[in-house]
Image (cartoon, rainbow over all chains, first blue to last red; front, side, top):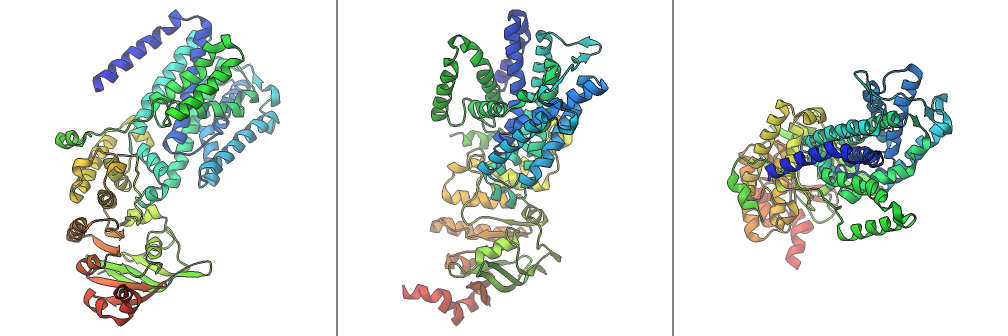
Length: 320
Length: 255
């Protein structure tokens, strides 16, 4: 079983590494978007999938990371990739600030407030808050990322940057899920009172889910800014938050393979249906509805964690 | 030695005084029962001890320190664990993971240690799984470790709640109607289990409606009615107390 997944990952890596050589620039760019949304989805998955906190304002954190990179790069010419930790930090701190007072809200209430936060951030950016965001026009002239003097410019080059970042994210988040931290998020999702009663500091873990999720979204914002070289508030609309939320729920909340598939379907599939022009959104909507009826846990629902038990006899017996 | 001491505890919800000036002590290593008719305020007392409610007046002393105003998770790490009247397991997680939630407060690794999978974190995880299995073995559920909690029978779900509470390494274990929904055979096994808990050095405070269980297992009994304490003593004395018979046992005789 373990070996099979290993081979699957290896084969996947080879296919991904070879993709830019086979595909044309347009499709490579589609894959770049898929990769970025996959990372955004994984970061939101910590909050929505694991902790069960409905966050429909994730684009706000994405925006904060992007603007941090854009402002500091265009004003002080700090290389964009160096700003990656700083984008994470500002987005994380912002999440800490806004989540603290609203963290006790449940379900739909939290959802409404996060929509509000997303909109406030977007409108603040349009209104040129502090005179540094460039208003509705946004910020342009952001540098391309550089690695040891090599400038990442073509979509094929960005492809490797984005998908490497995605792989690192998957690697780290998988470990995070299978730990005391990941379990704590699941406990509070399942039953907050019981979690608190079992000794879990639920408020702390909800905040941490927001902070880590936001920090990761902030880093994707940084890469987005460097890729586009121009960012404006319209890139961080409510629709972006909806896309991220949808790909998590559709793919399988709490499941890394699910989120990856969700990103591929939500971002990649509409490109395939371009020929249908206006009908594509309708096809897409019908597919979503069908999915929600027939597979409520998402296409690839989360699988239970496995533990290495000291006595193998118990493990064999427990198989239903 | 007094482990837990409630002093003149009062809690009211609006105009209703759910707990009125209640005081009693729990000696370390004893099994104490809290009984009373429905709505007498027993569960409210439990919720006050575990920090879910804050008392209007009075103090709660655990191990010589006041725990009033402490958050629930902190009280758990100080050594008070509980089970719930209505079963509150993490239904969609495995039996083992349910117990691991109890181990949580005795572990330290944070998110960074988990992402980097430091040796100390791996070791801690291994030890936690061992301890969780130990707690499951104690209640006799070790063979079900990988089942989902929701697939367990009702009686086993109650046992799992006890195992989860046990994994927090408590000094005081508070059981809220542990025999609820159990058949006679399961109740018999539960009595043995409660005694074994005490033999392990854990003090037990329990609410129970099953009078035979309370009378058989408890060394001291506190009786509440309308939020106030009306009697306290050994089972034999409680059985003979006219106030208790009137408030509680008397109604049973009329049936």
